[in-house]
Length: 290
Image (cartoon, rainbow, N blue to C red; front, top):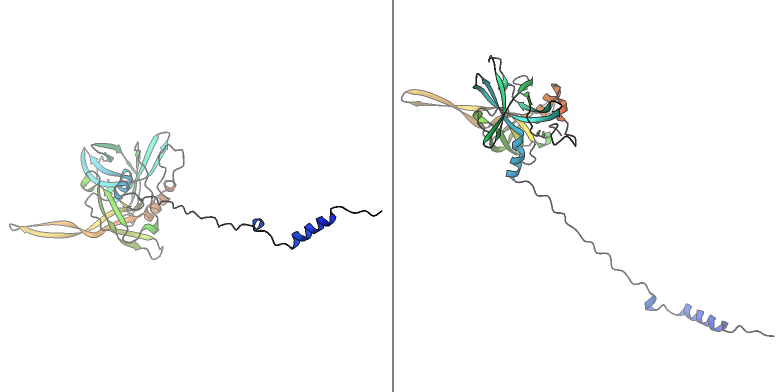
């Protein structure tokens, strides 16, 4: 008996026609458009204004008075470079000039550290714990128990550039803290160590500004500590009487750079003040460096 596979020729025909027919447009892959790249611009953080930066700088500064028998014998300025909390309470460490805290010629001197609080003045008694050799290292460190002020951050050497905008915070003539503005007018480098040895600013200062801070208006860090200034003598006559007075010379305010402050603290055994504060210390800054 001959058997036929019903449907087989039809199936083969269907397969043959599928193989030879072109693909229909519906079965072809549809090209996809590349994904659109959305650029999200992150706004740059706004830089603090001059007034905002000054507000950050002011809490680091104090003024000093050396008194004897309730009379002011000398005045100077200072900057808080360290603040520590211990079982005895908070202690601030103030950097100033060595020549400003000389008291050997006084019988019973007292070193007062003053903080101006708008209409009020906060007073503490300080103790000189380290001094440098004048004039090469005209720096001194004062320990001030009970004074709670934030420690300043010392600038890096890279920030000591000519033309850097600065503000000087000091207490000329022993009066309340005052500010003057200018720029770094000179940076003197030591050829052997290749480190900054001295800086100058054209910001005007007056007597009693020794120990004051020169701060960067860009970063708020401490660039240098004022040591002194050169003056020009002006002579004049009134009714056949001769008089003279000294006028500070513009651009001749010289200062110890932050590098010297670091070296001084390390050499005197206070290198710990160059460490940054650790979290959870109650908001009291532990040190002054980077």
